[in-house]
Image 1 (tube, rainbow, N blue to C red):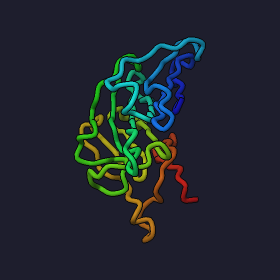
Image 2 (image 1 turned 30 degrees about the vertical axis):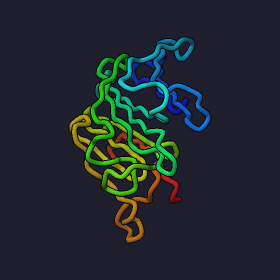
Image 3 (image 1 turned 60 degrees about the vertical axis):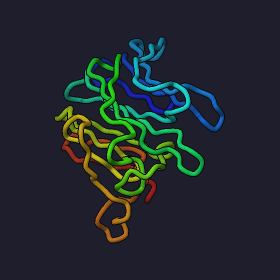
Length: 193
């Protein structure tokens, strides 16, 4: 298991993600949901294979419309180039089914170090997601950098760039968690101290 989220409206509804560990060739990548706080689980219908492609998945639910959930996944990579962007997904039926909004053919590897399509990243190490509390289509995705979409995942723009950190103009790399304060500000937890 990589992530666990509790529905803000229905506290007995819980979402979880699982992953495939390519190094050990064990596990299955997927998204699960429970209506009885984890006593029983149901597999969501996801648009990716459970083995050999997706390693880690993070999910986030829209506070303004809890039927909307988003997920981001990193790939298993290749030797020396692992854990890059694999896909960004949307569910509009409280996690039962998912559609692909972006896949690895997107113009940027949003889990990489630069603003390009070069493979690789650190998705197994740092991966975060938050949906804006007032806008179900505004989502921020954290990895090395933070990317934000205002149209539900059709397009993304960078919000931070780790190289600017040393000129005090941006955020340190490696974002592990994103949370929104009730006042609207986004807080990022990263490994920069």
